[in-house]
Image (cartoon, rainbow over all chains, first blue to last red; front, side, top):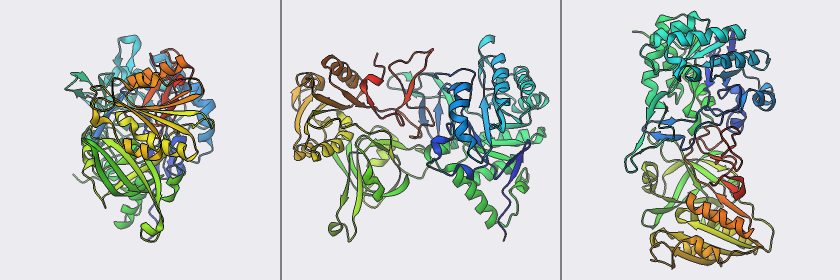
Length: 305
Length: 269
């Protein structure tokens, strides 16, 4: 049998395979060059970028939980200027689409970061993190209110012509309502899910384990929730979806595609296996060979209910 | 590099403390003292993450004793503190683990002829043995200051003594060596022309760093932190650098910028 066709298209970006790296789990790419071939993956998503460098939260910032981990890094990043001068030149030499993840502390910052990124030829697209507190409006998270999310997405849309992915938070009552709001505001694709808010307690010290008290849960523990949300959103909106949540192997990734995702992001898996993204792409291809499936795109939304 | 490794031996050297030897590829012989490995104890998703361990030793079992071919090995010393280390303590000869190594920055041995002062608190002794071995091989004068709460926390002292290292032991409760803190013993030996290499609980390292500055003795510390990846991506293991403020953030990754730091690089207050 011929090699299966692993390519997928995402909002105009051609991916050699559906495996992307999740923001915040792959640094700025160079950190992983010793552990995998950066040109073997579909796309690379950077750590979330803000207008100015961000210190992040005090430590402890991470703790392991059964089947997963909580993190409260606090969006530490080098800021847009240092990204352009220090990180992007390296990425420009890598023949893999680079998606810049962005966020703002205020609405205006979202617009400004988006417009700075729009000018960069080395950036194939942007992914908007709307799971941040709106500092100006009492810290309510943009991504948990459809109207606030819509406002952010519209603003970013006005500031970029690049393909725009919006990353959805699972910490909402109705993820479909959020997805529809973002689609109406001009998103080209949706990625889901971001981490689930959780916490861990040290019984003996009677204290929270994380300095930030709460953190975002990721890893295999959240995969069932993520699959359900991808499936729900896929039935409600027409945009291409990127499935994220506890993907550890090729089978996990293909399950997300059946649920309706056109691509996937590998996050926590890269922490315990820095070569995970490349391995998962290879495992997906092997599954297609074993089951005589000619094209991975044929599996998108192919779930039989 | 990432590789599978076979457990050769796993011995409880003191209550709750284990010394484990694993096979390693030849490339690991280039490991420098102070570097560390990330170990995945099982293929299961619980525990999910790797655990970081300093190299207690790296060596080669010669062909005539290893079944016809040289066998590189690596050793770690660990304390059972949670689920991962509990599982690790049950492994025995023939079991397989997955390693990512060598990682991080090593100790800088400094110029020849200085007296090298090694300071270890409890399990902090782990990376100091491999360092002592290298320093002794270079002909350096090495002293070890080992501290713990009680005698059970004083690990593998005879191994250091066999190298010819002069050892000074202190325990909080006086069950072994001097009664008191390891830093009190160290303080009496500090003088210009010496160099400190310390690993242990953060309060001990802070005391050593302050003491070293007062005596104008160069001091390197090996830090410990929760970490998920070991390669500088998760940003879970950061420590504030000396000039860190909220407005001008200067966080250092223990995994990539460390685990060994010059004590003046870090913020101790």
